[in-house]
Length: 386
Image (cartoon, rainbow, N blue to C red):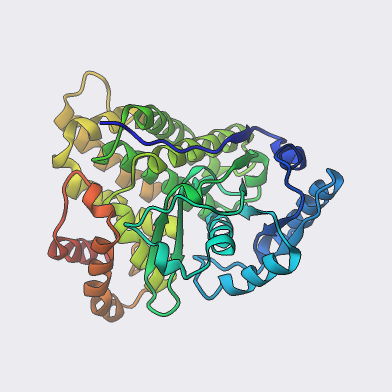
């Protein structure tokens, strides 16, 4: 099998890297970016500081802070207007997955036009698009390294997976100091999101030797450091490790694929406004238990990387220990069930058929070691409700 790989052209990684953003942009010949962020980062002053860094490097940014969690097609309208008014030659995505996903979508629509629905999977969009520079502030989505964006259709509440080189950031600036203010809940959810990316990239039917190494390294790093970052947000060693692992996991799944957890997670987020990492975490142990018999050797490798099994353990035992380890990790990180999160049972039951159809239609479940039927997806939704 020939693997088709796509990575950012430039990556600056390490503490203090954000101070080099202006230098990166100037080196690329870019001078008028739209800085896409959110109200939280404006409120903390982080967006203004980043704008000042750019201005100091001779770059002329315009701030756009009207992104929303889990961006929608409606939320892009004002951003497109801001792009046009500024005469932007590039887009900087500054924040978690939502600002970065918004930046990617805006960069595409500014050049190609149309609706985001026109670009949803299984279509692969090669470009063109405005250059995107990604500056993540959470250690989870991996969007800074991926040729993927996820946008919710405001008319149908469908979370649309859009993919292709058009969505690949030209550059990524990855500074773990930007994650030091993350609260424990966000640390847990984004860290589990990254772990899901890494495991699914490794067990995916589209895994390849390039992504395998990245995925296993990310799994091991997250296993050693996520609980530490959750317990003490000022632990700079844990923050730096989990930030790097999130990017490695992003590179891994972007160049292989995600699978059933992500396919089922997106509809939960769209219909119940559950943060993406949290909805992944709600599903992760149960979906892994469902899938493990389809790739026991692969799941066993994940268990060993995570530290849940040893090289001496046979694959069957190691794979089962991975499921147990994921349950324990979710318990330690206080991951709620949909019920304890406050989702009404009747609403969950009523929307389960729709969510199952949307999950299957996304294409991600087809990459799973065990490809589920619609009925099996419904049963999994019922099982995880709590």
